[in-house]
Amino acid sequence: MNTGSAPAQTATNAPPRADRTTLAFALTFAAVWLACAWQPAYRQDWALENLLALAAVWGLLRLHRRRPLSHAAYAMLLAFGIVHELGAHYTYSGVPYERWTQAMFGISLNELLGLSRNHYDRLVHFLFGLLWYRPLRELLAPRLPLRSAVSRFAPITVVATVSLVYELIEWSVAMIFGGDLGQAYLGMQGDVWDSQKDSGLALAGALIACALGLIHRRLNTLRQDGSR
Image (cartoon, rainbow, N blue to C red; front, side, top):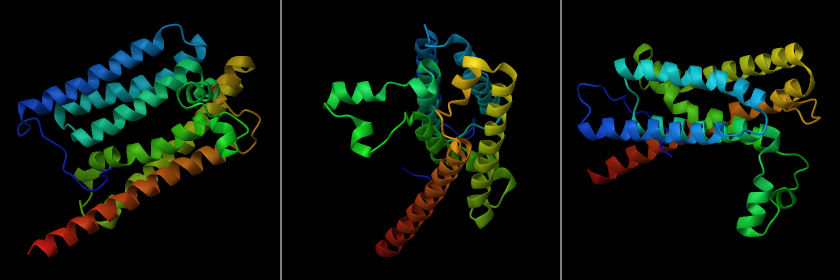
């Protein structure tokens, strides 16, 4: 995964194939969204989960007209969008990854890893930090020196802030709706430290993405020095 610095493409300089690639990403997400919108496990929870997702898509579409991101950034956003929509379709605590691993590999993932709950929500929080790091860095690039330490650590701050705000939104929704819908959206599964663990995993994902970017930059520097 290349999480190093890469300038966002511009509409004037991007070759025609770039537009087709971005369109393919958009159509792929649309197809996944429609498939996951068909008979979700819990319609009301699916609707709540998609409020922020559709707001993010709308914002990215508006941004693309003025300053598109790189293909790598869009690929990461697509990957995150797919795992999120799976969580929305089944509810996060009900994603049947155990059944999938049993069918494909004949193993119980929870038994193999010693897990006692459905950890799909933990995975998605981690992937939020890991996969949104580069897109956020590109979004912030016009306002920050590209190769500065600030440009590398600002996305981590954004991930931590968004993760905290999202946990507050989850808590608010649970308080407002209560009952099964509030529990489905909150997805605590009896873990009193659920919010802290989710936020910590998002932060860990962003830190790993930042570290991978630094490693990639260092390897490129060594490669260039060796070719001289």
